[in-house]
Image (cartoon, rainbow, N blue to C red; front, side, top):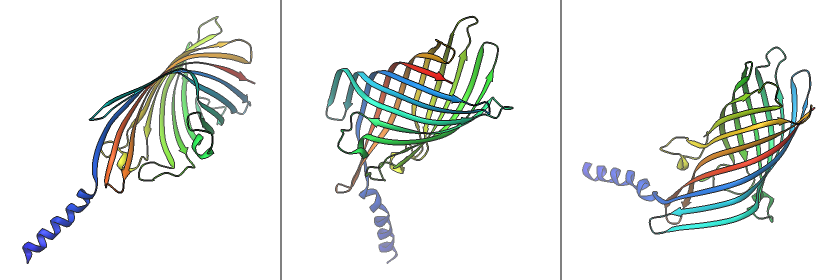
Length: 274
């Protein structure tokens, strides 16, 4: 009798393992070259308050996606400029006059995707809110800053919550520096940003943990063309990593595809501060 009970316990404990099987369906790698054009309008008050309205348009100039599986290799290549995304952002920031080296900010971004079709707004529109803190130190010719920002990406379409989140939380850490060229109306700058996931679903985690989803680096120069306006010319490199999960209930297994993206972006933005 004891032997029968022991066998039954072992069999029952093994059932969940048999019911759920992980199957790696390979990986995809995408290479993109983008053009980004934007404008930023910032209203400043003496009390340390700033209100900014920003718009950025992104266009794909070159796009190559390759996918590998155990059975085949597929490559999809496209050329020519095509609309990719637009980002419309309204943000508010504050720095106390006596502690100007610490600035708090919060904002909202409406994202529009150009490759999701135009029939369902739930598909081509995404909402984002963010809040963060930035600390800076200014020297004679250089300014160094560290920014920590929490981002929540929201979606209104229907998703399987075991595969994706309706509210996706991220942490972005950025370290940057700006340089002043004496006697010149230009400010070279560069920054590096690391983005971590905070709440991806259990099956999407890497080794059971959250993971780095993006690494971004940007170098550019701000050219002041008048007292209130400037142009920002930049180059950005971005590495993205995602784990696409497909839970097939009928077959009882989980498909995992690792997705890597390498983006090279050149851009220009107009800035108006008043």
